[in-house]
Length: 118
Image (cartoon, rainbow, N blue to C red; front, side, top):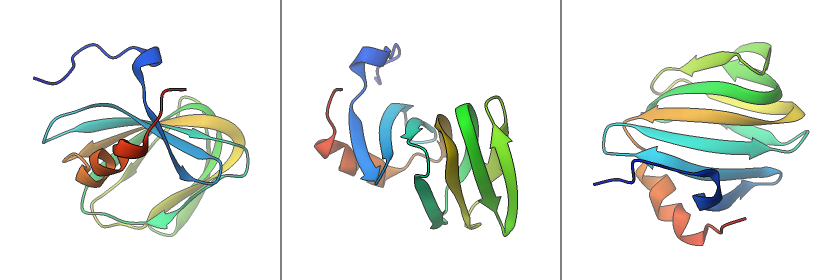
């Protein structure tokens, strides 16, 4: 059974790009939640994947692009990236995204082997 109580100090962080760190919060085969920290000007490069993604902006300001449409979004806002639709972000003010994926991202589990507790 997966860990059902996840506390901040338990998180293991992976560097995923310059100015970006990711920690897996919880998952099973059907669902995954990930916390991503961004430094100002960090870029979540345009990409797509078969997973459906919902991202909640916990803090900061981001220029978000989904399917060619750009919008500046702030803490409290949410964006949705359907399966296989290009999306990405540019961090305008340091912040945190909470990303939820369905199904879970197996490649994130594999990359967690390099994660550290910070």
